Each structure stands twice: as C-alpha cells, then as structure tokens.
Length: 108
Image 1: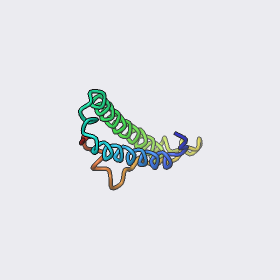
Image 2: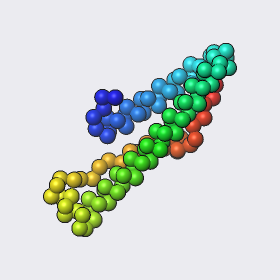
Image 3: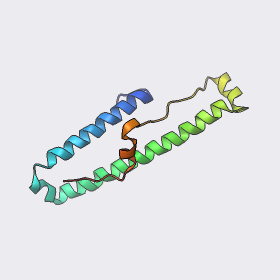
C-alpha cells in the first residue's frame, strides 16, 4: 500500500502473491474448512481478484508501451523531451510470467 514507485509496487505484488500461496498451503490441513460454504465463496472471490490483477497488469503494460512508443517516435518525442516525459518501466513478472498468465486454480 505504501509503495511509491513502480519497482516498489512490483516487489509488493510479489510479496502478496507469496502470502496467498502460504494461505493455500495452510488450508490444506483443514478438510472441514475446505467444505464450508463461506470458504468456497472466499475461494471464488480470491480467484476473481487474481483475474482482475492479471487484467490490470496487462492494461498497465499496454499503456506503458504506448507511452514509451510516443516518447521515442517523431514528432511526439520533441514534445516529450520539452515536458520531461521519459520511458517508463514495464511490469515484468520475470520467471513467474508463465504462471501468472495461467488461469488461477485453487487447490484445497
């Protein structure tokens, strides 16, 4: 929540993903919880949130790509230079990219 730059936000997102993985592992030990209606609803909501986060990452990268192209191409690069616009970092998931692009599955 307090991350200021894009790099800090990417690191925070990685930490949140790790926390969700820990939650999934912890729930494995409680079979009664897995059968609860409320918990099944929570599973659906977590899956929905992960899908929305993936969509937000794609939107961010699309907008960043457009900005970077505009900053580098003529004649918009002249205006970009005058007003201090510069290339921005894409949201790169690195090695976890393939996993993040998969549809989330919750295994309980």
